[in-house]
Length: 145
Image 1 (tube, helix red, strand yellow):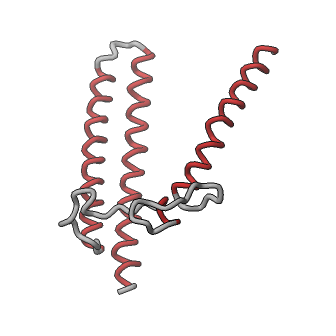
Image 2 (spheres, rainbow, N blue to C red; image 1 turned 180 degrees about the vertical axis):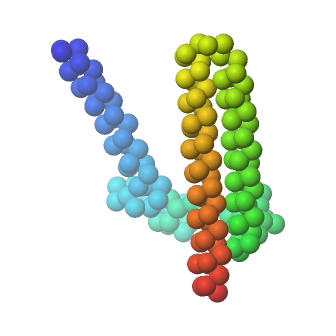
């Protein structure tokens, strides 16, 4: 019990030592801190030197589209759903192979059944996500234009 109390106290002190300074740094980074050093910057503009602006040119995305419409988002999501479906089918095949090669070992059979079960759950989630995004893109977004 004494060891648990010491370990818990040590954990709490370590967590506080990590969290408190990082919140101050985040506040200064986003320009919300009152105790941040906001002295003049290299171009002499003063207090806004702690704000960072990243443009698409900084990331090498100067020719990237500035706005995506519903068709582009739908196409991108359909590609993601297709890849997730392919992964699920491959996982189901692997689970079937594991099941047939279990040779009566109850642990391996249970592991294969669990893999099949979770693969089916994943497929259901993929299908539901596709249906929801299709509804939003085709129904809601089309009605707002």
